[in-house]
Image 1 (cartoon, rainbow, N blue to C red):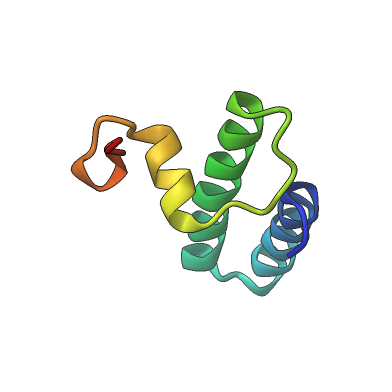
Image 2 (image 1 turned 60 degrees about the horizontal axis):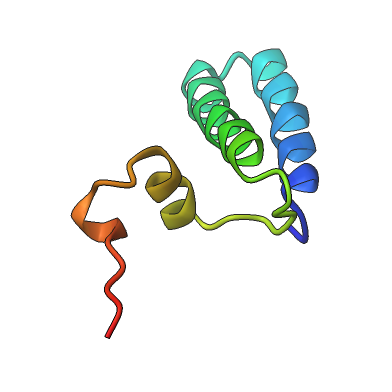
Length: 72
């Protein structure tokens, strides 16, 4: 995806398709991803790029060891 808005729209479309197919596991996965994307967008309104899974994780868990940034 080129932007977070495109990713959000794709997830919404995929959720509807998974619901129609009766794939509840995929629906749960996509709804979790959609929630993370929407939270990221809310916390970073000026950022339009499609965030990586690590960026989503660190946005939700800034205190995690994986998310620490050290300055030299």
